[in-house]
Length: 368
Ligand code: NAD
Ligand code: IPM
Ligand code: MN
Image (cartoon, rainbow, N blue to C red; front, side, top):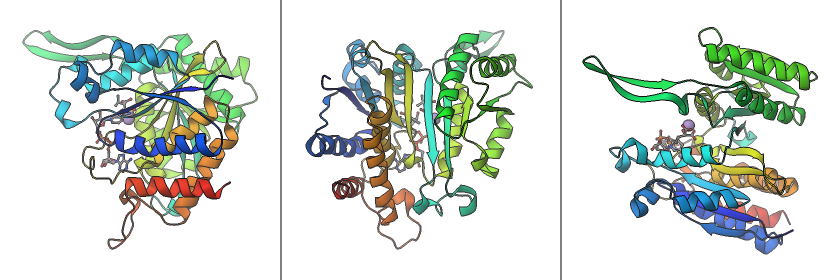
């Protein structure tokens, strides 16, 4: 097998800070496990805008299409707030997702035992939690036409369109059922079929894919608002949740707080298999560029490091090495090494971003 290729796009704010820790982990796997990656690095988001006047250059887009996997830090920041909508940092990320056709966004929410007291919910409610939100990522209201700010009479109107085709719903549903088969075999589909036609179609298509292709997986349907409530009430009732682009964005941020911090949540965005059988793939933390703590060495690198673990599992068929990395993270948390987002008492001294990364490397060393 040729050396697998990885394109790293650190992006903005804390993106480069957390990515520096991932680089240590990648180097560790090269040095200690003989797993070399052909790593290249490029710009995305505000950093790309500053250099090229666009949040993602055509050259970078082309590279992303060629590599085995892309790893992204985060994009955005207040200094870009007044830019024209078409060149905002977030447009770079949305272009990657759309042009790579990464329709299935896996956002696992796992509560590590050591962090069960950091959730805003009671320990009982979250301890042992292990759910997977599958968010549709390339369609829905994020991309539907018509869209824009138009003039109607003497006032302006902001328009976005929720739009889903049957095939778009079916393919993300399949991806959720496939995942469920390898987990607890249960899928809950969330939409608002009570008020949206796209929700009616969503429910019908998910049910049809289930009945025809996955009758042995347990399927339930829930309105997305009630789903948000149930995620806070008793999240352990869920195994896999499949939902649309916007509801998935919201529900995965809610799920983040079940795990203690947004700084903990990784994600994988997967498309159809390429010629080599690997899915097109982009891995990124669920969190953003965290402008409030950027440049201070405070960011938790765990979400980005766990995103690399997902790359090992889903792009490189290295499940055992992914397990090793996840176990190292769990061990470090159990030892009480924590970044500031996971500090409980006022007097405790938090670990810096680099110290957290170093502790994970030490735990990896100890795993050999
Ligand atoms: P955010 O996720 O950047 O931050 C929300 C809160 O969580 C902040 O208080 C932040 O300090 C904290 N936080 C986030 N990640 C953390 C980490 N790793 N360690 C410790 N604390 C962490 O969301 P926001 O403030 O709403 O958005 C800021 C910018 O990021 C915006 O421009 C937004 O569009 C962008 N954004 C980008 C992505 C992405 O690149 N995938 C995702 C979400 C938001
Ligand atoms: C996310 C973010 C993005 C989204 C933004 C930055 C485009 O919130 O990945 O969750 O809305 O999808
Ligand atoms: Mn989001």
